[in-house]
Image 1: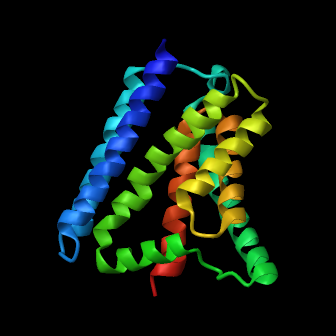
Image 2: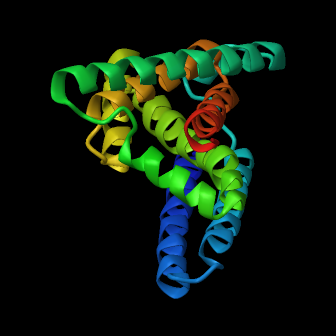
Length: 211
């Protein structure tokens, strides 16, 4: 079945991408080549995963309703604003209630890397959104809607999204995951949540990383 070939090939490629990145970190650690190499690996991995998604194309329940490019772009751009507001609200809430920092460890690390190696922006804004949206939104959330109601599938997928980022800001990443799933669900096109994810990453870097 297309769904099995699609999901299995993408998951295997995702694991291979993670392994390649870990090997690159070990081999290039402490050198100026580290982040350029990671950027190339990330972009190649994203391209391969995207091509596999097209090769073993299938429509899950979410994608059965017809979408169009205008709707996809509109949901992507408005979704970027929505997820930025959600991120800001949850970070502020966690800061007030639990005295957590207003910027997550992952974001802080990415900003540091961006200052050291600006080319890594390509990985943050292009590769990461493509890979994470196909994994967490299409494969996990989309496929789980065959077995659960969408809101239950969203909770499970968002929880997995939290585990993948594991930097202590549980509420923030959980809400972000739910918003990305909402965008995908309403647009019926994974490209919409990719645009929103890319917009979030880019604006976060511009707000926090450039001064």
